[in-house]
Length: 261
Length: 316
Image (tube, rainbow over the protein chains, first blue to last red):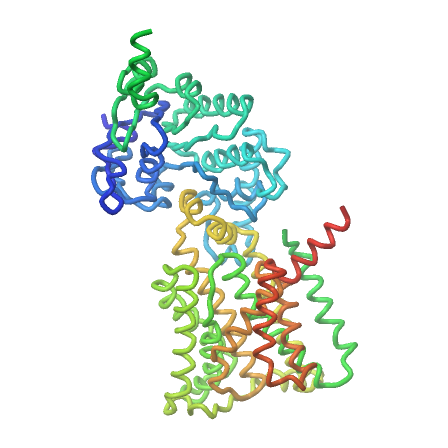
């Protein structure tokens, strides 16, 4: 049986610089796969390739056995892959509710004539999307902020709004790029629970996150990148003991000290 | 947020109440011009305000719409009314063809490409004299609707008829634009305006959405051009000119590019101003540039949203 998400030999070069090379791993429904590594290791670049924003120079991305390498993000969205962004990509001039509703685009879109004339068919679709969006906002504890302008929210709240928008697509694969960055301990724990809950519903989750406690706690599988290459992978316990990983994070001196100690 | 009903109510009240304050027939003419410009600017609100794309060539579509009303009756014997509809469809079709390659461009590049398109249309209209009678312009047949109204007992002067007719067309255009704002397509347009990358990741076909906005706004401009030609019963290639495009963009920016009500006020101010300041006629273009610059420096959201914000700020 083929895996839900299968990545093989993925690599990209920016003007001679090999930003990521030969990275491969896979994810199954309900699995949380974390991608970790020091700053500049190529985590976000990897995400951008998987989600179709960058065109990889080598390798392939398969969704349910179908090759979807470098497909435009909107086509990937239609195949059930959605994502959030490290540097927020919120629709600033819209209300919080409208941001969430826009995640239901594929569900609420219809003939343009119905939109221009506000035909009953369009109203039904829009009302259904709106009701579901409200439910999602409640789920990420933004229900009370629904009518506010998105730009007025705090950083942590915007992070949650992005997750809500990504969940609106009812994805099979969800890529989360630092969902807990800039969040306090309480918020981090909430996001933690939310991710576990989403995974439990059968979504394959790819996670980039710097909060190691969180990563170790919720991941089923961890892929470690350094200088654009995969240096280790495995379950959290195996990875955290791997000398190469310790070296990448702390440097060789630290490793020596660790062994001497 | 745009309140649809309130906006339509305000516009309807303005349409109905203004004539009570008109000292002479001439004011109906100005009012009609405001609505015609308002219609084109409302189209630009969809393109610039909703979708965040620029066009400096929309007068080109007005040229197509206007000349359709002149040429289709002459060459094909079509009634000028249906000719305006054919013109709008033609403009939509051309916008679709032209938009596909040029909407890949962003910012300045898109501005230059659309500018080129507008100039191209104006040049064709001026130079292909065998078809268009060249730079001196061409007569446009009477729409005949006013005569029909006279038969049923409604007696309007020509200016009065065009005031009411343009006003109604503008109201319908405003209604459609407001519908679009709060619809899945409108949300998609505003989403790609906010973040193209995020719009793509929620499944929006960005290229298609931009094209839709471009085609719709082209149809608005085309109908505005038709209305202009029909009420003047004459048209010259100037209608498609570069300055005409700039005028409309300035109106949209002045009013507040994302607001239909703003579009109307932008159109009203910049249509009336040259009439009031006839002494400065030669400096009209300088004035236009000045308005644009001041807007960009002091009120980047446009007149109406800036005023609303200031009022709300004082209430707090």
